Image (cartoon, rainbow, N blue to C red; front, top):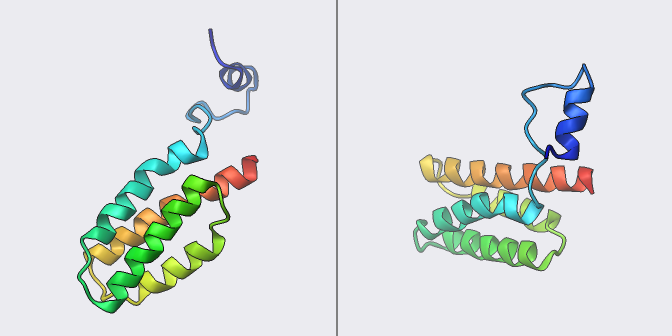
Length: 111
């Protein structure tokens, strides 16, 4: 039996047929990028900035799991990632953080 979203998509002529099914629960959708972020942070060195970024990532993970506000944590983490030396790891951290932001923005708009 097709879902409500599929029926609506099929009934409206201006609906984009490439549009996929509705996004999963925000916590579920955030699981992979948050896991990536935690993994990449684990690869950082032991210098002060790396330790701070790892602590920021842990705080963000705890806030997401607890359903708490994440805006300040995201801003702080973004700033501290910017303090890391440029390179592939910093790019990977920024990409995962961007995916988390996208999920959070979508969930706030939907909710």
